Length: 181
Image (cartoon, rainbow, N blue to C red; front, side):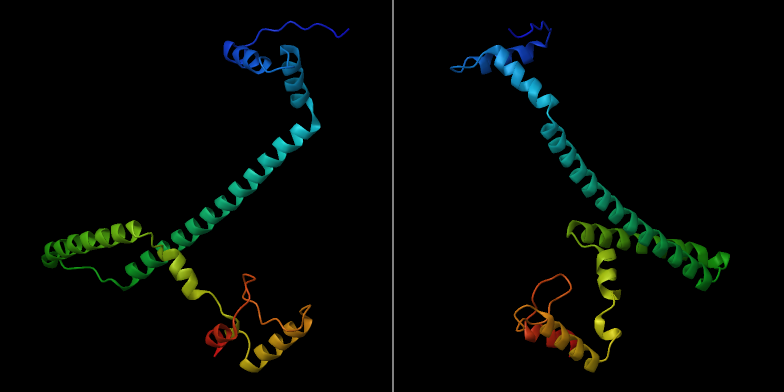
C-alpha cells in the first residue's frame, strides 16, 4: 500500500487535475504522481537548465553587441565633439543671432534625416563598420591570395571546391574575382 498524502492546492490546479483524471484509466493520484515525478526528475532539471543556459547565452551575446555599439557610439561622439571644438572659432557677438537661426535650421534638417533613417531601418553604425572593415586584399598581395586559395582547394575533401567566403558560404568564381580583382 502506498503512503497517503493530503495537500491543499489552488482551485485552478485542482480543476486541471480533475479534468485530466476524467480520461479513461487515469486517476487523480496518477496525475499528481506523474507531476511529482516530473518535478523531481533529473531529466526535467536538465531540460529546464538547458533552456535557461541557452537563453542566458543568447542574452549575453545580445548584451555584448549592445555594449560594443554603445562604445562605438560614445567614442564617435567624443571624437566629433573634440574635432568640432578644435576647429570651430568663437563667433563675435554681432553674428551670434544669425548663427543661432542657422543652427536651428540645421538641427531641424538633422532631426528630419534621423527620423527618415530610423523609419527606413537604416543603421549608420553598421554601415560605417562595413565600410571600414578590413578585406584580405589589404593584408596580402594577389599572388599570395592565389597561393592561399590553391592550398585551401587542395586541402578540401573533394579537392574541387571553390574558395569559401568568411561566413562559410561557397563563393562563385565570378564573386571571388569581383571581390579581389
